[in-house]
View 1 (cartoon, rainbow, N blue to C red):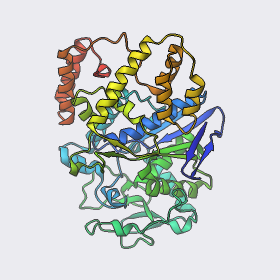
View 2 (view 1 turned 135 degrees about the vertical axis):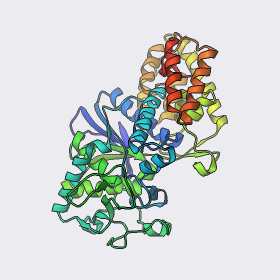
View 3 (view 1 turned 90 degrees about the vertical axis):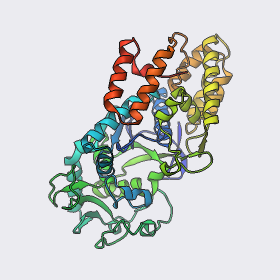
View 4 (view 1 turned 90 degrees about the horizontal axis):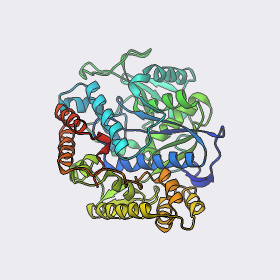
Length: 442
């Protein structure tokens, strides 16, 4: 199996540290809102990676985090140490507590993973459940002389880590250039690339999420959680770390610095990153009205697995452009592929070619093409272990119009954050003999 390693900038033969075990860490959602379909592209790519590893006989321990504290809005302009905590901002927006916000969006994320046929992680863990581990790691860095303290927080001193920025291999740009004036930079930071390990709570903030620490009451920086939690569950060095391409320059670069600064060991052997999803040929954004969510897909009556199929039409390391027409084409293709699968018999076996495609850095467009070529049912049963497209759905009961209406109404309630109504509709759907996970409308 060959995978493209962002760290070495080349495709390498995969060789796990402790065969046949594989430690896999995937950066999960910041649970302040619904993920966009660009986020889901990354999560589906990571699901394909895990499924492919298991298809090859590896035993995968998969860890995914839920960021429920410390991810600040300044990350939008290239400086994750500035701005407002996304969780606290969402709490104000919805008139809930930050804890309620986290629970709602974590529950929604777990349910949405099921809808998209994404396998559950071995450990799906919250940053707020691992504050002690984060404090302990910061103390370890402090002991090694890699930190300093200002009036606003505890920072990692990148000048003490000579390999800083090695992941991207690019020349780093002064982050202050992209920082808006109203996001006030800490004037006592030594270097603009130094990043917060622990932020102090300011009296005017009135934070809901804060903890005592040896340095003062506050909350962890965004990056420290992934280092602390990945090392707790996978060890100080593990096999694969993944995320979106936007994580390379800052989040993953900082993870490497603080992890390897503490342990003097490589954090992960292989780093894999998924490319961006564009919409109608341009960027996706709430201000543009095209930051579509899975709920938007369901509301329009699409089978959510058509979105999964759509993601397979481009390699995970290439940009993919979303349009509603492209999604409709994906749904039509999925229906035809299911029909072929259900009528397949004992044609020529193409398993070896399919395996070659997925083992070539997860070449899903090629794998999908081979699935279309085969007429061998046993092959397609095997391929489905990777594809997760519900190909053999001939026994799947037709969803009546009444149930479809309830499902659509529930999606609307969830979109509008009417938690009580969404729960009521879920109970109504179950009372009529349908499970929420049956809401794959085709």
